[in-house]
Image (cartoon, rainbow, N blue to C red; front, side, top):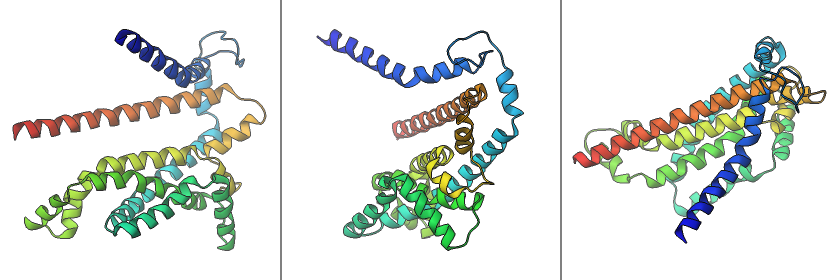
Length: 268
């Protein structure tokens, strides 16, 4: 019975992984296809990667996406972390009310958020461009940072902060030397989620970008109206490999951090 259950589990995991990653593997393979055909692989080539890096429209859109994603993610991470610390210090009833308000942007349809931000920028007479993109992306990223940091604050031992203050730290020093290291995994998770959502966002960016600040999703959408070029396959492959590398590095760092903690506990 156990063998059947184990076999079923392995088959189930294999099917799920194939469902998730097989389309990506097909995309990666066809990024090296000599022909523009999306149905027949005619031969291996790197021409589409060369053409990709000489495509000014895609490179400009990629640069805009990176600038907006990095700036908005950093700002959202700082604001979200400070907000999470403040919310954690509230009483239970106030904390519950504020968290309910914080969750509204997460469950709110993106088209509603995009239209409302567009109307706000028009009302404030702000010209659409990179600035409005950064403000909009920061706005919808802050709740995700709060949701990532709050569990780490609940898990933190409050007595560590009190011990640091008893040993001579003022509240600011205790915050940076004790609280920040303890909640750093939540901060990094919030930053990566913000970076991913910002880089991937299309709907909100469509309403607040304007004609001069095209992000990568907007540029790809405009290109797909005609025909999907193999350059998009090459770009998607590079993005997938880069994200996979970042995730592997973060996981390796987490494993090393956990092993150091275990060694410290064993020595005690």
